[in-house]
Image 1 (tube, rainbow, N blue to C red):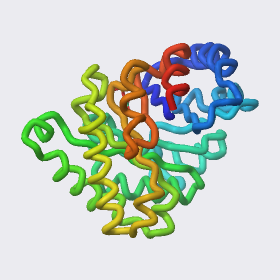
Image 2: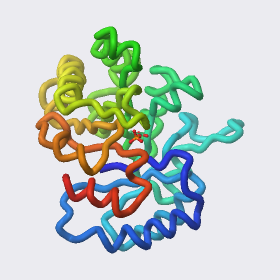
Image 3: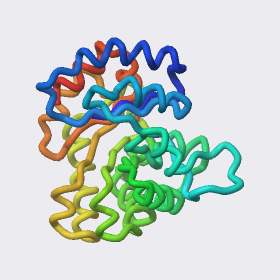
Image 4: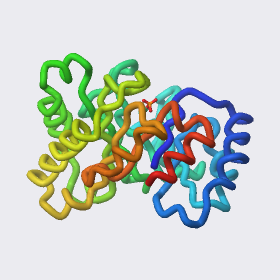
Length: 245
Ligand code: PEP
């Protein structure tokens, strides 16, 4: 279960979250929990989560190891700050920062090289959803992006299906719609990387996940977890989602 905090919570608010959230994580929780705070708060979050099973990730990564790339953060820097995961290709990055499928591939490779686990995001926009072109978009994003990984690299990634029309809108994909999209991604995986890879890759659903819809989503065998934005900002709400896993 992954929490994408986007550009919310400063360092103090991050500490306050962990003070409340960490005691709620009991030993009985058997899923992985990863929180993606603002990059400036990663060291504080790593420290706050030290004694717990919570892992910390970056929301973005640059593909070069170092260089004259003002404002960017490398995989090595994230790793040195204690992050072990990273989001790649989130739709907000694609939309506002013009990230492309080929850029997503380069960032995914950089993450793997830095020993970070990337969650590679993909999903269709509203007009494609309405016009029945969701699978076409997923196939295109897959082919232009992570299909370029080697089999060995692919074994190190997780994928998030995040329909753009469901992100931050309160309009969740039904479990059936999400499962169909996940099946499409798994089938592309099987064609490119083989059946074992398709069975093993974890595909999370993201898009307005809330405590009252997570159970239905997690009942789908195709859905291996959730990437949660808005509902992960409040410890009491996020723990309900984690517990549902
Ligand atoms: C996200 O940011 O990845 C996300 C799914 O956001 P929300 O849960 O708010 O729709």
